[in-house]
Length: 429
Image (cartoon, rainbow, N blue to C red; front, top):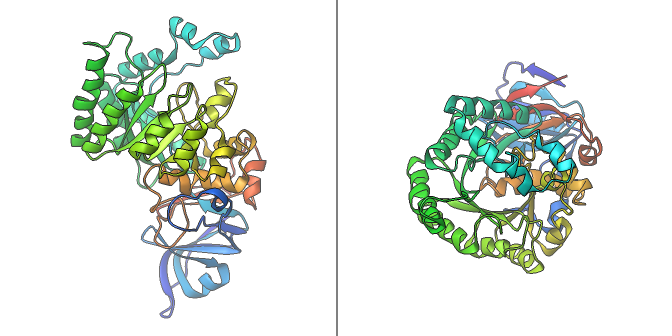
C-alpha cells in the first residue's frame, strides 16, 4: 500500500483531499435507500479496479481508477495495490464502558455451572456492576479509549456503546459521560445508548414498580436533558424486565425525543420482537428465541434485527439466532459484537466470520450486515456504511482480494488501512 502526496494541481482538474486508487474491487454497498433485505443483501455493489475521491471528509465520486485519476487532482493518494476496499465496519451493539473482567468464570462454565451458581460465587453481572461503580470517570474513559483503539485497528469506524452496569443514576451517568469523552470523530465515533433497564436489582428500593418508574420518569428525562444518549434500550426477558415494564420505559423515551432499542427474545421468547416492531424500535437485538410471528413482524417493520453470534459461541448456548429465516422473510439483518464481560470480542471481522460459519450467511450478506445494515440499526444509515457520493468517507483497505476472503481467513486481521472522514488513521505495509 502506498501513501503519497499529490503533485501540483492543474487548472482543468477537480481538486480533492484524498484519492484512493487501484482497488481490486470497491464494495460500495450501493442500492435503494434503507437497509438491505432479502436478495438485496447479496449485492455488494462491486466496482472492479476502483477508486474513491474524497473532499471535506465526504465521498465525492466512485468509479474506475483511470477515470478518477484523469478527473481529480488529490493532495494525498492512497494506493490500495489491488486490495478489497469496503466501508468502515459499524458495530451496532456493545457495552464498552465497564470496568473489570470475569475471566475466572470460564472455568466455572466449563465445569457446567449455571449462571445462578456463578452469581452466588460472586460473578455474573453483579460483579461487573460492583467493578464499574468502583471505577472513576477517568478510569472508565481510559478503558473505552483503549478498547476503541483496538476496534479501529480492526476496521470499526462507528460503534454503539451502552451503559447498564451503573444501575443507579450517578453511575449510569458516569458510563455515558465516559462514552461522550472517548468518542472520536476522526477515530471511532461512539453512539451512546442508555440501558438503565438492564438488570433488575435483587431488592429494588421502594419495590419493583417504583424502580421502573424511577428509570422511566427520572433517569430517561435526565438523559434527554443532558443529551447523554441517542437511544434508550430495555432488556426484555423472563429474568429481566416484562413487556409492560419495557413499554413504560420505551414510551417515556419517545416522549423525550429518544429513539429506542430492545434486548429481545434472547433466552426466552417474551414476544419482544413483536413489541419492538409495534413500537417502532430502531432495532431488536439478540433474537435467539424469536418466534415465527416475531420474524414476520420484524420483516414487515422498519426495525433492524441485530444478531450477536458471539454470545452463543462464547456462552456455551445450544443455538444461534435464526438468521436464514430472518433473511428469507425479508427482515433487515445486522451483526454486532455485543462486547461485554461475558463476550469479550471487539473485532468486527471476527463477527463477520461468525456470521458466515455460525449463522450461515453468505459473505456478501455478512458484509452488508456489518456495514450498511448495522449503520441503520444506529440511525446512521444515510451517513455511514456505504461508499457513495455524499456519504462520510469511512473506508477500509483490506489485504484480501474478494469479499469471500474476508470470511475465509479466520482469526486474521484483514485491515491494511483505515480512512476515517477522509483521513488515513491506521495503516500498515
